[in-house]
Length: 140
View 1 (tube, helix red, strand yellow):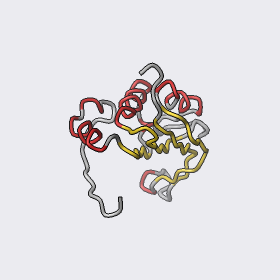
View 2: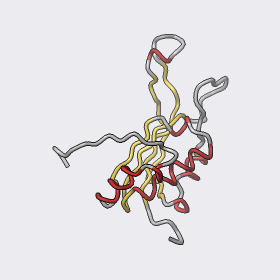
View 3: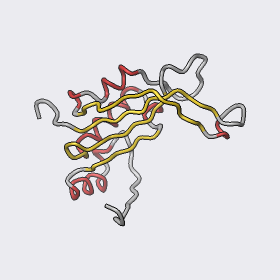
View 4: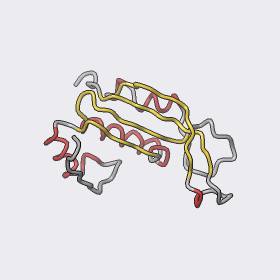
């Protein structure tokens, strides 16, 4: 709500179950309504990606939204930046079997800071913008 308080908590994205304050705050709120991943997912290996989305799901309320921006595998080689993620990989990570419903997945452009580009003038990278909604996990 407008005017509400914000709390920042340091925790491992790949061990959210071990983050006591994150767990208790999610419980107090009845689950989080929104989670944002802005360019982190593509930095994780496959096991860590699964640990992140699987650890986040129990913290979300039913219908809660996860917004993800990540580098796309459409970026051409040679590629010396963080990993790229395919559409099928995103759909697998954010599937109904894992407790997510893919609301939208669109290709987009991500502007990298100029100090991170070889040219010193910034760089545009092909990316995915994804919105997923938390749904009940089958069998739970």
